[in-house]
Length: 283
Length: 255
Image (cartoon, rainbow over all chains, first blue to last red; front, side, top):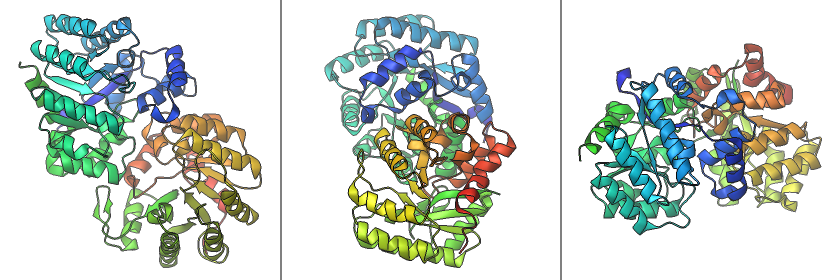
């Protein structure tokens, strides 16, 4: 396939310090931690050598090169796991700087947080003013949806829609979070939702929502029995994404290419996300 | 030489990654693994590892033995046991490994998480007595804790931690294997998916304690082989991971 169209929908800049990972590790029950948190803990707590941790945009671009991927949609771990508005600002600034440094290789994925709605909308207004609407905004719920405020999230997303941001990537990891996502998708049919999916309860209902897209970074295992049904249910609404460095880009790419129907490969590997981003910024 | 020490037999009608529906011919699995570059593969039956009833284990182990009988040069057999049925498990171990064609025990998926039960101990004691390696599935830190307890309690046993402990346990798994000389890790699952994990295991544990595995047919054998080929390690180290460590553990397993 045309290499120009291979887009990794989710790569993460690891701008978190060791103390953050240790705090997360200490505060989350083992079975409730998500893959990103686990990865950060392992990296931050020293078992992974520094050379495996993508701290800089150069590290991400190098990883994309190795895997034969032309572009990546970059998020900041600090913003994804924001403890306060300052984390959100710092993480989003890091994303902006990364994209400025590699405008032809990286798309931004700025984070928004239902816990900090004023700061989130303020930053999106700022980025919109700079003309940076080519990437999806991200509603950050990485640390689980405990204390989930649906009305607050709907209100925030509605404001983002009004500001012209038409795509949101929602971090979900557990079946009970899928219910929340389903509710959001139904209440905001104009918003396009991307989520990292693994087959489980509630997936059929999500697949029935035309404004819900699934990316491949959520498959904590690429078991045929969990990944295959996702592909069958979502069809061309499956988007290639690795979640690097949590998952290795080349391996996820190779698996997706082997499982997905050859006719859908171009769509899944990049053109689908590019079109989605184009549509999402036209509001 | 590449030996995949941890793979699973599908049942007819099940879907293989990128390869379509399994027609029940073990020969087709041999072709797939050979095409991927694997010279020998140790299969356990996937249904037996998730048994609902004791008969699932017997049937699964029977299928594995038959596959070994049909392709002795390419297929090795792993006998599934289950702590819920200790008597049956010991019978199966005796029949399939001590007297039969299987050479190892695993993948042991069903055990009480976070706790070593007496039933599991009884099975493990029998296996240790015959000095046969055991492959334990692990996804969580609690699973790693169980295997660590066994490794400590039975120093003459050989314990292989599948997936290095899994997504929620690989860091704990590598650390545990560094504490026990009789605890090894395999590369299937998470270590294949996360950059630096195989290299980290080799750095922390030494190359002698890392064994190549794919978890085929659940995961893609082609992708797994290619991934390890790209791992940032010297070729002599990779040779240990590919096959030498396994041969050192089980010798000539062909029966």
